[in-house]
Length: 243
Ligand code: PGA
Image (tube, rainbow, N blue to C red; front, side):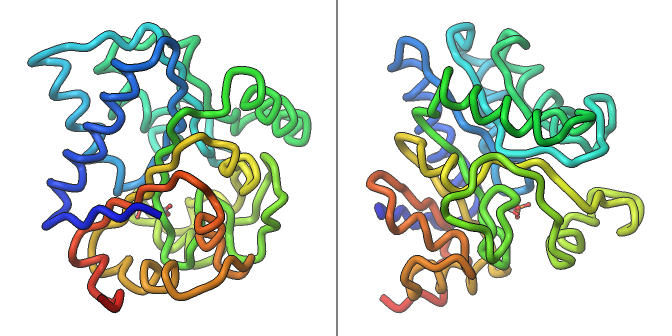
């Protein structure tokens, strides 16, 4: 694993935006795997701001998002569809048909998971997958105990994950109980992975990432088996790693 330690969240976001920009400008038909949440937000803000100053072409880019809440449609303000549109897609003029996110309203969820995995295999795998990490080591919505062989599937969200995400909803009861997420095997198909971690609250998870052998009780540990992972981490999140 390559490790880039940055002074703060701003520098982390700058560096990950640079890596994405290099893929967008350097590849003929780049496929970007994208994540939602607080951590990649600074990255997306930078990509959006750069478009206003020195725009780059995104028409040849395809995106595949990690996950979506079950029960939330595109128009729901807390859906990941809405997040991606508001934070990134509306600012970079990427054709909507090129952007892919699981359908949280699909009546047949199993069929939706199968469709999504086939999509990953047909247009992907991502050249670059952006990932955050949960306090419990989850990646995407793959909670502890998820098989490393998992493909896109429906998950029951861990209480700690629902609690962590309650800040985006008006009450914790409103946080959906399930999500559709790319599986760990799906994520590991990516050619390159950029894992982002910022702030003291992620320090324990980053410590475990370095301490633990790959094991399903700590999903992010699987990344130690991937040949091309770059961790961009700020000093606060890196503080417990022995140097
Ligand atoms: P966060 O979420 O970026 O909002 O901290 C990360 C995650 O849960 O994967």
